[in-house]
Length: 179
Image 1 (cartoon, helix red, strand yellow):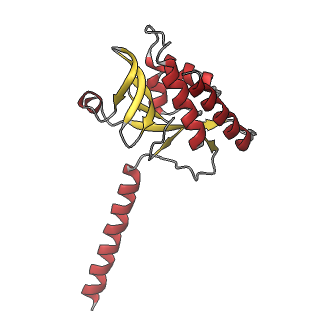
Image 2 (tube, helix red, strand yellow):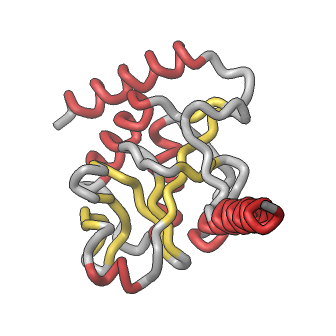
Image 3 (spheres, one colour):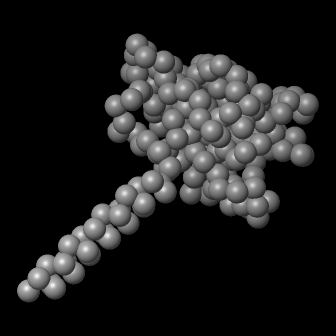
């Protein structure tokens, strides 16, 4: 009998150790339900995408990826203090890492950042060698850069989410009407 109790205790200790190791290996990813701040809504994310696609025609080809993304978020009405892609990759207060990207989220590697357009198609918009354009974050070139991280904009505290959703819907409609 003591042998079985010892074996059971050993199994429980090993399982607890493996659980702790698995938790430590997971990145600190927050989803939409987090109570640590109000994240960009789906409609607001779509408004960011609309601004990104509209800027494609007028994009300054000399602008690097992080400046392009910053300008798009500013134009869409979601300002943040400029940060380069390396800083965003390690984490900045204006964006929260998420596990499942949505349109309008950031896709970030060390040294590059873009805006997710369609997660199902793995497409994103950014400043590329060919200029501001769309690419797949599952393309071999991007996979060679390492694992991408996804971040969602954190709206400043005290903002009215409903009013922001309405503003994003109006902005998206106005941007689409121009084209």
